[in-house]
Length: 368
Length: 158
Image (cartoon, rainbow over all chains, first blue to last red; front, top):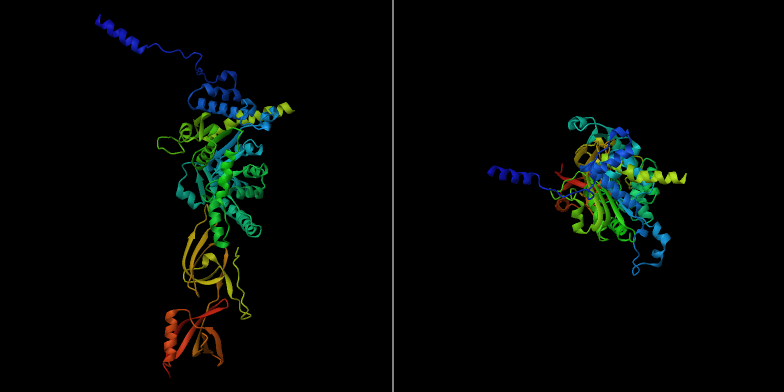
């Protein structure tokens, strides 16, 4: 009798009646390879596979929303609308403004080709990166980066003049070629500064380098051609900075104005209205914070997608989730946000395949 | 790429004021031209080829005439200008009112275009020695069309 009561209370604890999730949540179901090896279906199945696969599926969803949004989706607020803004045809044409940020290691990797595709077809509006993110792109036009291994010993590599970036190798010679290429450009820029009163900023410098490299494999070249500004907050922290340092000994006087660039970057966010803004940020560090900070000036971005491996337990901004940015006003409370914890070399090409690239393929098919 | 400005003085023809030397071969205690000034090297450090490009020599040097500290960084395979630095001794004849000295050259003629030294200690020693009627021999350092008294010694009359 005692035993029965104990048993029944244990029974009711273990088999506690659950709330039904049917209809409220998606069922978990992975891809069935019996369908064959169908990559688009495989990628779509990630949404219901769970863990980071589901997060990636969510990211794909949010980016597609970013790409599909038009001003005509919003109800007109008559008070603060100009006549032009009320015109339906105009409203159909207004799209989301997309900020793309990435760290330099991704440019050293093959993700550089994915970035170049986006810039080439003007699929993003503003780019923010680190110094390495710029020079690695330029150097690849002069000499290639090679695949190595994480475990190659440092002292051995140094003796061979090879620099290791993760499991990639960049020979010293590549940087020598970069130096030989860029110093005459700095000389010319200094001349223009003195004779034509040009005041250089990081973004103007980068546009100039994109023009000078004149190579279709470079995303910086396409950014120059498509008039997409590239902002680099920490321009001196890389080989480019080393070149500026050495140039200042031989022929000093080159001035690079960062104040003008902060006006320009924040202006991109502030003057985006009536467009919505979306952030796609790969990695952490400077690009992540700089884009979020600029969007704070317009009371927050409307879409935010983070792809990085950072953790929040140390309080770093790199590891912070989108919700932390909401507390700062960098992302709106009403925004669609997703963070996927994944190395961008895996996640980003897959993301672009299911969003930017597939939309372009579809629209190309419609035209033919 | 040696793009320093050269100050071409109109003085002695024939002998060149500088000669080229590879940056990697210039040592501490040697001479180098930085920003057109002849300097004596007090420190050299080399950074190996790397992310910053070619191997580079970092020179810290002192202008031999103004004693100002100057710095330069040069790729080690590039050529630098090295000044020809000469030291000639002359016997002091006279100190003029307008700050010049009169010197006796080897071939018996006078040299009157050398200014008094700017170095306080040297100037005092020169003036007092001359006033006391001592025989003074001055050392004149010259490089790149500029010259300056750099030392003096009192010679006992024979």
